[in-house]
Amino acid sequence: MIKIYNTLTQKKEEFVSLTRGKVKIYNCGPTVYGYFHIGNARNFIVVDVIRRYLTFRGFEVTLVQNVTDVYDKIINKAKVENLTPTAVAETFTNAYFEDLEALGVKAPDINPKATEHIKEMHDIIGLLIEKDAAYVSEGDVYMDVSKVKDYGKLSHKNIEELQSGARIEVSEKKKSPLDFVLWKKDKNEGISWDSPWGKGRPGWHTECCVMSQKYLQHPFDIHSGGIDLVFPHHENEIAQVETATGNKLANYWVHNGHLNIGGQKMSKSLNNFLLARDILKKYSKNIVRFFLLSAHYRSPLDFTEENVGNAVKGFSELGNTLYRVAGILNKPLTDGPADTSLAEKGIALEAKFVAAMDDDFNTAQAIAALFDYANEIKNTIKKKDWVLNYENREALKIAGEKLTALSAILGFKIEAEKIPAEIEALALERETARNTKDWVKSDLIRKTIEEKGFAVEDTPKGQILMRKIK
RNA sequence: GGCGGCAUAGCCAAGCGGUAAGGCAGCGGUCUGCAAAACCGCGAUUCCUCGGUUCAAUCCCGAGUGCCGCCUCCA
Image (cartoon, rainbow, N blue to C red; front, side):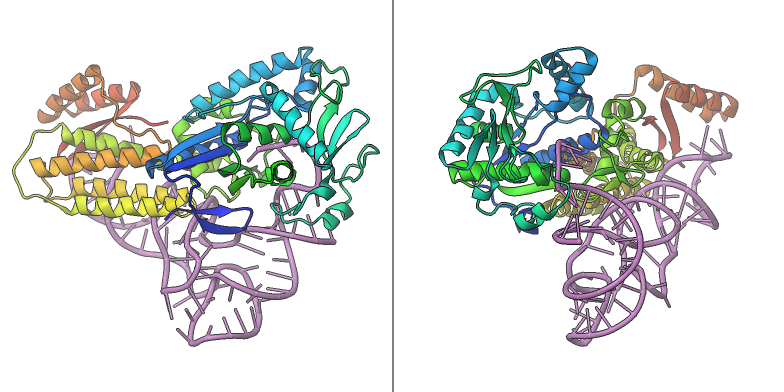
């Protein structure tokens, strides 16, 4: 049974999809006015893992992740750079896809753009006006929050408390400070569309309403995003959709915690962010993912060089396990008793991994299961009475494949790369030197191998070659 | 001010009623010609504090302290 924590009910709930065997997910994608940072990456990776896991559990998953390509910040950026908003959006939309791929995030099934759904936005705004839940004011259109049943149910706020909050912008155009803009009157910002209410551009929130409706239909299964989107963004999506259509928007609301830097939220407005693409210059996508998944997705996680450094060391040995397996599988078979313990423990460890992931996608615990699995494999190889007979070789091979497959659910690509012939030749040469106890030559060759980015280890069963992991 | 979350070994981090996973670092050992490697073993007797519920609490309830987030754009 898969359990998911639902922000709406503030409880872990059993996951039951609307259509048997299928899951529809909508994740709030980026506003493309700059490169996305590692905190944004956390969200994309968390959703990627949820998607991969649900697929592993037999669901056919449809993931929609929008691109917000019209927005104040894009317009501001365009002004500063002396470009058109469209050009800015295009540049960073392309960069977004590049960075996703670099992080090992599978491309979402559908990547709708806000600007390609203006007509649909007009429709829902029109419907809201018709229902007297929205009003026109000096060329802008606002949502009338007082007409929304249960406003605040997602973020668990109530209207009175919100109104007493001092931080809400007061606008003469709004009936209430809580009302939010659906359509903004054009102010010659270089991007606008005609509408029944005059020239203008869409406000936030509405795009997600219409794109989720168009590609997934309401209600769908899972709506996700960063915890900071709970209010007002997701609250306002619910307000619009449920008021306009009377349908529930989504069943499960999943929100990931923030990536902090120095204990503080990483954000573009605080200017304390690290770009995903810059981090990737220093660390591999495996390491970045390993680090980001080492804490539960709902917990805050602090990005420090030390923490990521730990991830590098921890992850390396996980990856190296496969080289150790591959190295042993190469050796000639010998006679001896079969050892069934690896196969037995493998089943238990896979179950541990699945149980962890079933429980609200507990990747931290799932990673622990991977380490247990890797340790079991290495321990087996090291056992004095374990021999490479046919049965044991098959069991080892299966264990290695299983470890690779489970890791792939978290998006870790661990596999023993084919060792280049050149390195193999060096290793053979080294073995010859070792056999004649020519340690000087042997160590020299080891050094050469290392300089070429590989490592060689001597074990009772012979040399093991592996690529050094970064 | 309102709402929400978090406080677990030197560091990171699971656990959410039955007596503390995993990783990094450290220490001891095994293996090795050597080894930076690998493997094995060792580490929390206040799980922030104080009360309470319970046969039993890190886990539930209350109070307190300290952090963080949201209430404005934000993954």
